[in-house]
Length: 307
Image (cartoon, rainbow, N blue to C red; front, top):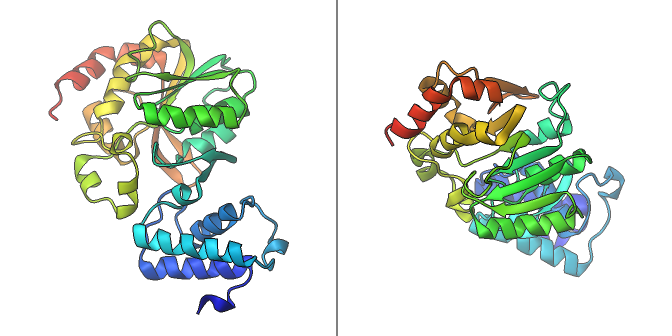
């Protein structure tokens, strides 16, 4: 049946059809079968994601065709994310090495990076930034690449994730401005101060984690699950962030669907829920002064809420 498949377009169409027929879940950088099939085929052929359409009719060699078909079948049989199969994911217009040591790079924060965090950083000078719970390093590395004047720290508790992040730092030749630090949130950051702290921490509730499709079982649980309400990590960040922000510093955190729980728990805190091209995506911004003003309420919520 596959003998008639000869070109790049043939393989993309075939993969998309197979993925849809198999009922796969698309949540790792893509939300549909066509985009995921395109990622698999082009990356496995070492071609860029923006390959001009004129190359679509290009014919594959027998070895290339065999390799792509094997990856298509593996994706269906194992439910392994495409980024892990091909070892590559794209974030904020940049390629990143991706494997099971960290979550597949994905976050609406990519849009903020590409838009220079406007208007939230308009008029603010940023010299140092922190990517907390960095995983593969994609957020912090993209921030550094898009802002040549910034020095960026990447922090994570996982040595495996940091090893991958360091590979991505070297891959993008940013060793002079980006460093990776093992830290349980702020614990190993001592007196470090940042103009901008950005975090995409774990925020999946225990109930949500138990119901996740098979694709997510390939990712580290440490990067996903965050307790009964999904706020175990976000509240710890809120509780300590002011200590590590400069006077005019800004905190940006993604909490996804746990936005409702956070608003209910801290209704007096003036979270600014950021708008993206597709609407709100559970990402908030807070100024340091707001964190200081509401420190008592945040601290109480972090320490006393039921878990």
